[in-house]
Length: 403
Image (cartoon, rainbow, N blue to C red; front, side, top):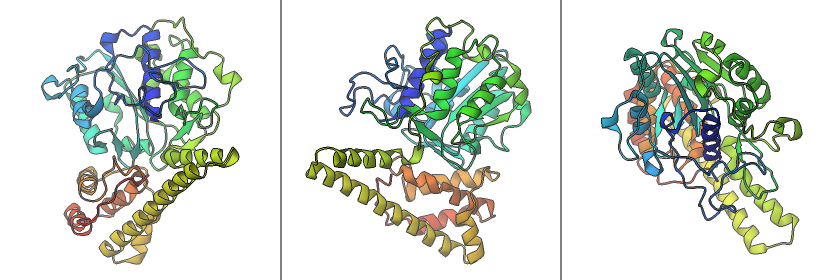
């Protein structure tokens, strides 16, 4: 089950409840979960235990393979002629408009993942610069839910661009899933940062609450990662209603939620797949034994751990054959940078690694190690040298499913 879709649906209803019309909202969502055969609640998604179905009523503009970086960038820039698929809607805005962007998916050092493809910090930075130069907004607020999400903005979002960004984590840590052990027989229901800001917006008066206050509240409640903010911090003095709707919600779906419930088990986002398999296995062992089902799960878990070991071995060999100095090689493995300064090298190297070594969409655990590529660039190793090394080392890799 993909928890980011429940986050996105919940955010959609939040905006609608606060008076933002459908015509002012654009939704990109793969939409393969609500009617997935593994969903015990067909046609429904939940973001909190026993909460409202957040899937009902959501208007999706782009779904399936249409949810890709190229369409996302075209939508941001207002370039209808570059959009492929979907209903063709883009942000049609001007110099006095306020824009709110909420993105939730996997991430890594200097990149965020789409169901089809990935977006690097260079690409996102370029899109925001383009929007600023072409006066596509007055102020833009960007909430980003992803692992290492701080690396998408740190040192790359100057205040004069009039963009205020809040991220679920800093540039070198995981974000976290919440409600990961619930009595609905579902995996994690949401992401901790996302659920925190959405619930806050549902219970507060957005016409009096400022973005600064929301940041302070969410930062405290998101206690497993370090929520960050970047860009023009003075924008945080604006009221939340300027970006999430001015109407007072008459639904207030979870006003007392934070007082009555904890967020349950919290799991690092990158380990949710493996931890869910282990939880299923423990349930089988705790209840009546089903030898065949347990054996299948044990085999899956063993295979995942074997593939993870292979990946680590490959990366050690990859770096050691590229960087003969053992001290530098160790530093490249051990140091987790929070920011990217060499955007060009990072962009080209990550793209080459994705194409020729490990596809990030089918090998999501590889995202844990993209910082190694960042370090190679930050240490001044030329992008052409790294790319050629990739071409030489990755020609025989045929491995998928590294979770």
